[in-house]
Image (cartoon, rainbow, N blue to C red; front, side, top):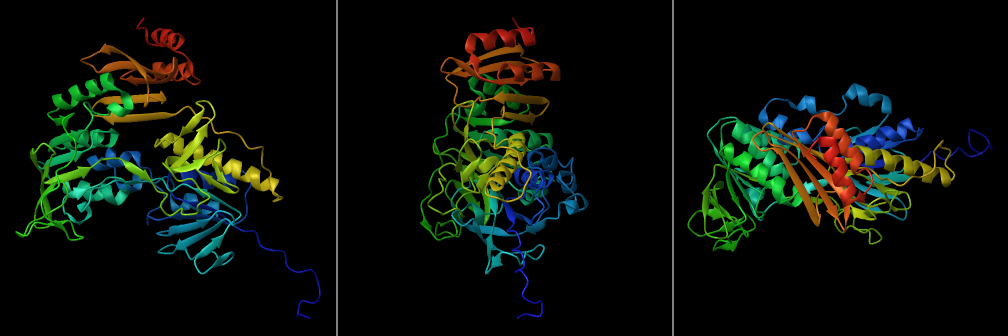
Length: 463
């Protein structure tokens, strides 16, 4: 008999819900869990040491120096406190057993972890939401070269900003997608010589098509950005042997694939056609990869992100949200993955609600509604110089595009994108907010191409 007598055994403490990823999607999920009635333990795990912050300003306001890091914070410590989070910043998740919903963690800095449910770096959970986002792609050996940067995290952006603090540098940006174009615009505004290198014939062609990309190319050229596009097949591999630290040429100079260097510093980029582009700085903006390498459980499909159903569920009790999630979009009828800021927040909220609904069905006392498919109207924007571009729906992968240039000098245009006879997306440059909102309604659900075209002409007065 214990000192407490022979009464009923103490009730088992509830397992926590863990949210892996402390950016926009993860924070939205955590807040929704609390707002929706989860009062049990809630763990928010982020591998960076920073409080949750917003990423779109990294390549714009922060890089320009107009904003300081504290302005990027999504919530202050005082705003997070009421959530009662077990906040583990600087902590990396290294594994997930989907069947038992158990995470493996490598702890770093941050608040000491929960004692409940934790044993030897593992965390047994009632449910898990994965919002680990994406990581920047790089090139072999680049990580060892001074002057070569990527731009995905706050620390990345601060490092590049420090190098751009003094004007007159020669910056080569490898990659002419959204990130590369935005960084080019900022760097030119700071007075640097900028060369934008890409395989596509015009900037952002894969996202916005050839005609809108052509308008962007005109603007970049007008701002004295050198465009090396459409002629780049890749990067020359220099003679040498791999040392694990780039390539050693044997003459005291180290080079990595496609780079020219002096010592450990980059001095230029060599293109596949032999062209050498002198550079003081190189920004690699060659895309990103979903952060799923830590998810080795064979029951999870991690091809191009974590595969989920229409409810954002990857397995029982396991959900995903944001850039890392590839889910069955119920309107478009195929799996999609978006690296869009608004989608991160909306999907974080949806995943949280659906997880709670599932847990309620398992007998946990939670006032949760039924699960609902996640069916957003995708939205993204980009700011370059004085150009503001906004798009709704699906613009990539279109088999038909129609662009109406309303004012070429003012860079005002609208474009419609479609697939298999159906309009799927619309993009506007330089249109007033009222017209942009009207365009969203046109493709909120896919409609026949001709109907969408007529409605766009009415909305923009271009008919």
